[in-house]
Amino acid sequence: MAESALNPTEKLYSEWQQPVNRWADLPNSIHNDSVATKIGMRGGTIPGTVHLNHFVPLIQDTWGMAWYEKGAISMYYTFATTHKEDVRAVMVKPALRSEDKVDAFVETPEEKIVCKGSLSVGDSPKPNYVASLPLEDAPRSELRILDRMKTGMECPERDDVIATEGKGSGDYEGIVELPTGLFQMLQTGAPTGTLKKAVGFYGATEIRTLKGPIRVDTEYRRVGKVVCVGASPKTEYVWIDSQLLDKSSGDVVAEMRQFSRFMKASSDLWS
Image (tube, rainbow, N blue to C red; front, side, top):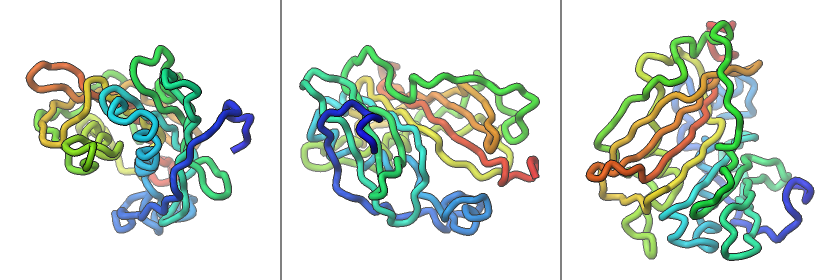
């Protein structure tokens, strides 16, 4: 990435990673080679959320447990990678230990930006990258795949959400260490009965822990609602906000803003 795209300060780099496409056999999925190539992709794609995990060594080296207690990762996905392609995470090194928000991204060896956004810890007065993006509903006449969905609709609630992946070890024993584990817990899905058949993919994710760390052996309550339903020339999309709540106190312990797109080219409604 050109230095002009970020402040010309020192950067921290993860090791090169080669994510495996574990979803290649899913039918009607953008992770499936045959489906992905039909709608113009290079091949079955790696879910954008997988790339969030590349930041973990950098987060732990920079902020340690403080990030799991109150921290955020906020990424907008810009380039889809495929099975075992090299990627690495990059973050701007905080100039001071008190610096609470920095730019970050994932890149390929050819310097293609896979996702871009920010990492933060504590009570930063500045919004994280994804939260800073403007939201605008599309006119109802522009929606076909998502014409049953409206801003304000509530997503399915659950009272028994528990970690199934991303469990930590060592200094992070007993907590959800990987962002994909937090994503799994916070992902509500769309309001019941609102999705029509189309190939979808993730557009952006912001996960914030407010009263962490999130424990692997604890049940949480999950709620969510639609905050925007929109359209672009090639996709229809939805933004959903969700929260994890402590079941005894009712406190919000973590929250997520998730952006999901649905390809018009994959839907009979747009053929």
